[in-house]
Amino acid sequence: MSTVDFPIFANSFADDLPDMFEPWSAVVVENPTLLVVNDELAHELGFDPQWLRGADGVRFLVGNHPLPAMTPIAQAYAGHQFGGFSPRLGDGRALLLGDIVDTNGVRRDVHLKGSGRTRFSRGGDGKAAVGPMLREYVIGEAMNALGVPTTRALGVVATNELIPRDEMLPGAVLCRVALSHLRVGSFQYAATMSHDHVRRLADHSIARHYPELASSNDRYLDFFRAVMNKQARLIAQWMTIGFIHGVMNTDNMTISGETIDYGPCAFMDTYGPTTVFSSIDHQGRYAYGNQPHIAQWNLARLVETLLPLIRDDKDESIRVATETINEFPAIFEHEWQRLMRAKLGLTEQSSIETSLFHSLLTLFESHRIDYTNGMRALSDVVRGRRERMHSLFDMPEAFDAWARPWLNAVNSDGRDAHEIADAMDAINPAYIPRNHLVETALAAATRGDLLSLDSLMEVLLDPFHEREGLEQFTRPMPSDWDGYQTFCGT
Ligand code: AMP
Ligand code: MG
Image (cartoon, protein in one colour):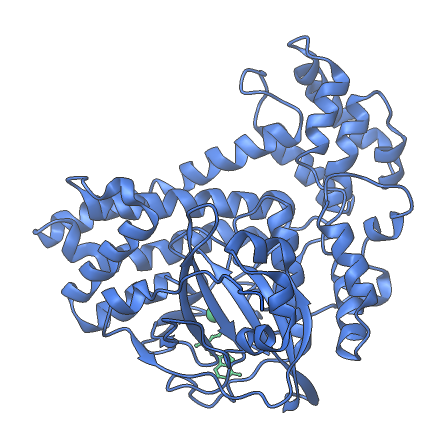
């Protein structure tokens, strides 16, 4: 008999915030079958991947095999969805199994999605379909490989039940890992109860994510500023890889600064600030170019909940909160420029007008350049080879005109061109989860064929290292995919 070690479960959230959840159990899945396990993440968390693949492990991944001290809960939260406030959303098809300390000493939430109805389900069935849960797995792992803070999937299990959507679809449960599931919407929910609830939630958040602020004498304002900095950095990363979240409701914005909820997200191919893929985002509220603005709007909703804690005097509190939130554009711009410099092979010292960043993007937009391929081709130009970049343009002179001052700046400080180019390749990915590739692989997986998903994952997990024979993974969406749309909450 071998003994298996498991991470030890706790429920920090439930211990600290008794009014913000309902104890709940996952629905029993009669006939679960494993679709994927994330071996790397399993090891990091202290799970044996072989155990997760076995009968008990699979039942654990759907919430039917409790481990010691595991007390699942459905978390309550509120949220602005497309600008309209819902005071009570919460985990309508999700459960927090608890939190564990991983092998690096970091506390992580283990959470299920698709685990059945809860008190927060409203009209929903509490279920999730195979395609969207695998999509969360694929995009989350791709984001992680791209170096973007994100929740991650530990595994996806098929329930072998059909669930009603536009058509009947095979059901699945996703087991998701996050630094926490604290959201802007969690604060909005606490604020519907009392100032004291907000204070307890803020103290819990500080202890969990910003412990260095515990002794600050302006802790709630400093806490807000810390969240704002994390989010500014996150959104700058999204922008520089062409990621469109698609549903930046306040319940989908974390306090930890991780990307959460891969519903209608997509990567932009042709550069365009107004790009939208979500079928329900008719106004373009969550369009690519609007994301920094929306992040600031969401953060304003967060700081509103903290006002009573920031200063005793209401007007003074509003004044300092406003002053602080108004810093967001400059903080975002600083982060964005830092990343753009690196992507363009420039150092902090290179003397370059930041208007060159914008003129490059304008050039990409007017010549309908694939953003990822255009950025990746810059390193070849630094190596003295322009064919790759020129092949993207119908009028290559337009690129050459832009490139003159840029190359002067790149070469101005005597660094080795090949070293610069290699460093650029380490930040400009060759491979991103292109929409048509993801959809094709998910359609096959939904039919039970996981092979193309496996090969796609292999490519996406090593996005900066270009390999022979993978050209098909760098091609933009074919024109018969024009009008491609993504969907929420399925
Ligand atoms: P999302 O768009 O995934 O962020 O979800 C927004 C809200 O709708 C959350 O409160 C979810 O729990 C809830 N929700 C989404 N899909 C379902 C479903 N099938 N059943 C119950 N609740 C759901
Ligand atoms: Mg959500």
